[in-house]
Length: 226
Image 1 (cartoon, helix red, strand yellow):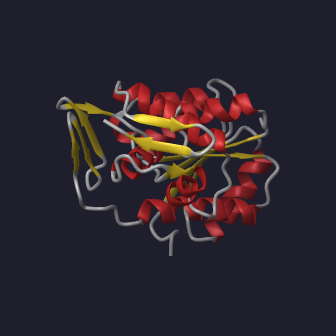
Image 2 (cartoon, rainbow, N blue to C red):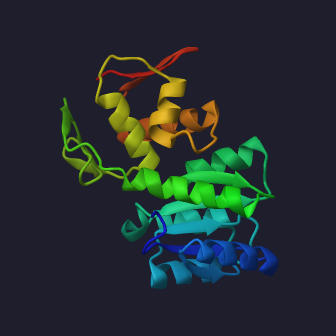
């Protein structure tokens, strides 16, 4: 069961939403901690060390994006799952949320059942056993067992989805992966994401690696070449 032993922090400045989400996730078996603003969210995250953090964006003191940036900058939260749950449905907010390192972005209103299914899907993907094969291509090394990437021996910090996407492409150099293949293998069938999500993650990978190793095949997908 995905919920067994998992702790979730929910940060939202609307008491009614906090109560509804806490009730339903607790009923599902999750250990739930709540925060009503950005400062409290950062503090509770450091104390509770949750497996998943659900963030509203429009919160007082610190907004959700700022909270995400603060936590992602700390090694202890490099692999913590982060999900934005917000009323901001425009593309710009969606893209910015993913670029700061969020694993998923969900817009309000959303039914408790659908939110729970998204949460469960995130944990299922994390719980999948990684491939044990370490990939070493030129000056790039990718270790799936440790979730570590190095370029010229120097560590490169990637978010979970960035790592999984890089590993998928690098495992078959020269092979063109269709967008649908990438969505299914990295995000899974349970989560609804668009092509823009892939583009955002590819751009972040390129920036962080500092390598021209992922080629866009226009209208088709992506391939790894180094």
